[in-house]
Amino acid sequence: MAVKTIGFPGRYLQGPGAIKELGALLKEFGSRAPVVVADDIVRQAAGQALDDALAAAGIQALPLRFEGECTKAAIAALADQAARHGADLVIGFGGGKTIDTAKGVAKAIGARLVIAPSIASNDSPTSRLIVLYDEQHRIAGVDMLSRNPDVVLVDTSIIARAPVRFFIAGLGDALSKKFEASQCHLAGGKNFFGTESLPTARLLAERCYETILEFGADAVQQVRLHAAPNEAVERATEASVLLSGLGFESGGLSLSHALTRGFTAHPTLGKFLHGELVAFGTIVQLIAENRPAAEVEAHASFCMELGLPVSFGEMNAAGMSASELADIAQLTHAAPYIGNLQPAADPARIAACLMAADQLGTRLLASGKIPK
Image (cartoon, rainbow, N blue to C red; front, side):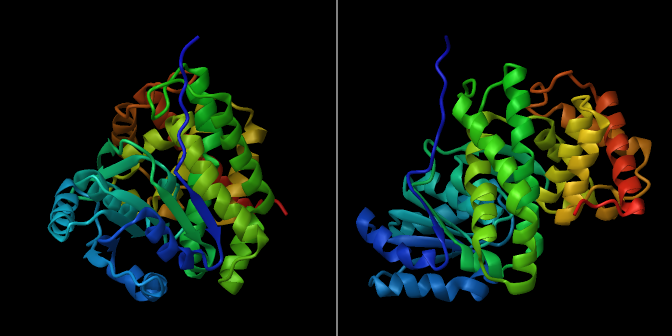
């Protein structure tokens, strides 16, 4: 029997006003020189809440300005500023790329790490992964922290005030994990700790999917209409941030995320949110798994209900050419977890599944077939 590994953040806090706990946490950790990685938009929209939380505890943090892309150069520049400040703790306050940049800074200077997402658009907060991009906004590789973040602090009042598109994208990213963890296990693949997955990781991924089925649509409506959390928003956020993060890192990935290598290199698709691309990629994966047509259609219809893209046309790429599909398929086939799929898919089959997913989504959109 092989040794199996599962990983967790040191602590997870979630709820309305959770950001107010930040000062006490930093005092508990004995931090004397924290830094905050955030972009201008997040600092303007929610920075005051973070500053107030620190001020209430008598703590000042050096702001580090994130300029928008998580590149090796951006991490190195901010790490240099943090090191010159003598930083002992890094706070990542923002979306996925801000969070990954904060992880990179913490790794570079050997500091503790607190993640405070301002949106729930993907499951990066809980994991050790640092997704790196190049200057053309294409995925360039993945780096790793030696441990998961010390604290993940999710203030659902801040999450619910962000544009609903980000919230929906987070659900799209999370919906893949049940299928990806399962395929990784069936194919004998490894998780992001380099081992086979424990059953607990797969259970978390399955529970993530079930929670979004139960609460996702109501949560989207609540955010869209009221920009404030309720029980549905709390449950959906827990699924898209915590359950999804644990499920992918300790369960493993498959075709849904392998496709992002191809999608982000496309000049039009690359402009869409990670979770939107993964959501469409999951429909492609279900087709590639040879699942029953009714099951694939039901999943795609649920994605429609949430407001996720189910066709290339919705992502401004209608009429995708054979050469474009071939390019996406070739890059996807080179992704490290493409082997976590049964039956195995070569570039030609990936391209065929992409076309089939687009045809299904286009047909569903034309029929207006959305479950109630």
